[in-house]
Image (cartoon, rainbow, N blue to C red; front, side, top):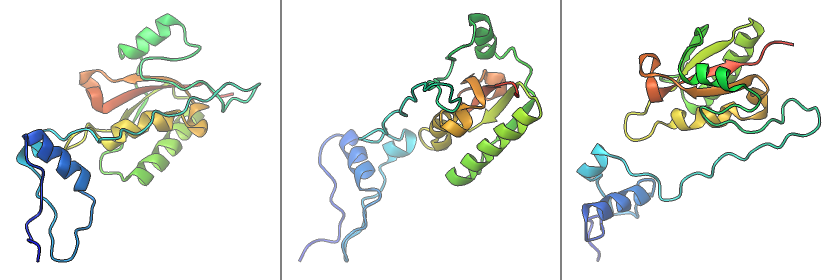
Amino acid sequence: MGSTRARTPRGSPDDAIAWWWITRDVTPLPGRRKPERPEAAREAAPKPPHPAPPPKQAKAVGGDSSQRPALKPGEAAGLDRATLRRLTRGQFAIDDTLDLHGHTRVQAHAALVSFLASRRGASRTCVLVVTGRGREGPGVLKDLVPRWLNEPATRALVLGFATALPRHGGAGALYVLLRKRG
């Protein structure tokens, strides 16, 4: 009979971390247990072995306002250089803030879409979206919110976005510049 001890690869601590990362969602066979999380993994979680593909860029099609080029933080198609500089330097007055701390992915997505639509309807110009940085490793919402801002439903509302300055949340927040109504 086999041992009930969880097998981990021999070698460097990086191997143990990688093995834990790969097997963290695996259900062990009866009589076996999952490998314990190495101490080094608690300090700095590794990146997944297969990173998620970048969001697909939408191509501009005719006059359809929902099909706009994908945005990246600190870039904005159609904005003049001075406006983009003001956005990245946090020089716009923040009209409202959405804090996504404690939200699940589904709740955060719904809250973001609703928030942007309502603030645009209220003629807001610049809003702050706080995603947080994540407790262990990169924050899930920190990575997802830029993708969601590029979805057709939200991309039609957004002119550009940029990482916030430290006084507004730094890497865990985004300035979002909204399109004018009409």
